[in-house]
Image (cartoon, rainbow, N blue to C red; front, side, top):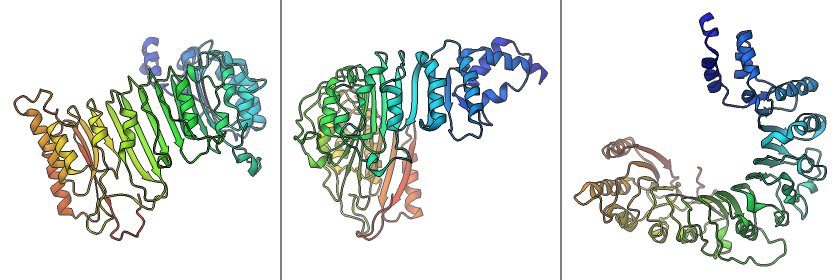
Length: 468
């Protein structure tokens, strides 16, 4: 142990660099690396305390501590070790009460000029403290991750989203360095609060996955987001516009967008969805759709988002909001056969290398034939798909890979080999003999990155709710 303690400082620093990947916890936990290694010997402690980079990221883990003043004193000591380095701060507790106030006033405010990343759970009042009147200035803040919760002291009425409940135009106080925004509003936000005053035009990343917004609000946000590279949105078509007018779906252009994740809630309420957007560099698209009841699923609605976009990675998830009915193939008394129409979307995505169809989205025989011959998705390498038997998918992959190695396989008329397969079999009952046969056939494909195989057992009676 003595020889380890006496390692050269530059070698010790490399060891510490690897050890201190995460933030410093406040209060420190028993397994905190900084706490453990500073107790090894005085030399190690002196080296660790002298390097500001090890004290530039902080995670306030809890608020209920037996001695709040000790936590404040320790936090001031930790922050003092950071010197002048930029800071990343995560507050995992609502900023209300005396301790929350003291953390903001005596810890955050004196160092706010150096904060580049801020993540916090706050009440609406806490948000006003951060970015409202008398706000704390964060001149170099680049990324903010905010979860807005309600206080246990609030009345029921305060949980209902009403106009002006949380005016997000206060984000303009955060300065021109702000590029990334993640916002979660657990008790709802009125559409009017996502107004034009928010500096959407300066964001390169927007995450509103857990903040349902009206389609009109999405249109107004995306139209201003000229620098957006990574966007995640939850669009609820059941929400009403704040001014009562019908949504005007118009052509939009997002010139820098590379990744788009959309959660669509009841889009069947407005079949128009959106006009064909101009997304000239979009490569990664993930679309989730939730509908109430037994709604006919038409995958043609996704053609809007892939039109003239160089999509390489596509994920489609379909689910029922009631979780009582799923549209899946009939097999041994399981619910009726329903294959989704996907010819259009596959024809529009010739550059696709990865296609993930979440459980419940099936391909019919004609689509599988075109995949095998390379008419659809000639450069597809990775596939996740559902099947009632599994053999139709295995035969398609076997033929596709055979076509790719045949003479002239490098030409545009032949597909490339599939290198990874995720197969989900959804049917009632799958005996051991069937499983062994399927496993053997999948192994015989000799896929470069292998395969995964799972079975979702479907209840025998159609009236019985399915559980997933």
